[in-house]
Length: 175
Image 1 (tube, rainbow, N blue to C red):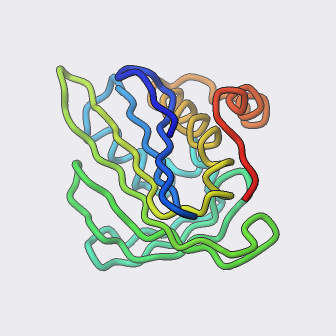
Image 2 (cartoon, rainbow, N blue to C red):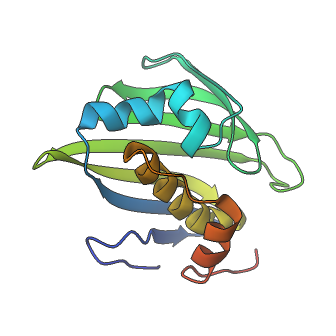
């Protein structure tokens, strides 16, 4: 397990067998409604999450489909919890491919809590394979940095440079 300090941007990794959970906690200096918009609106996801396509049927039981991230994974799933602007939880299903030979069937959860005019964003990715988690730790770190920059209306960090820098902060292993 990788631990982080309470206010550290570094994520946590929990391993149970061949599955993992990744947890990040960020303080964002914006109200929950603004953060909610950034994590659920396809127009907002286009930038920080690098979505070339996103469709979100905003309700519990609704469908989610997106082509996202630097690898442009084609993700599908059901929305498991939709409680604006507090909780957004959905399935994250990717068919097997070159970067994910066994595919993925994970659960992604975003929890937003108001605190002193800011938002505490807790991001939890459950049931990822160990192989995927190795790249998602530094990758999610960078994506959340991009989200922070977008909310602050700053230039978004360049993906590859930031990812390479973040890799040194996280463990890697072979499956």
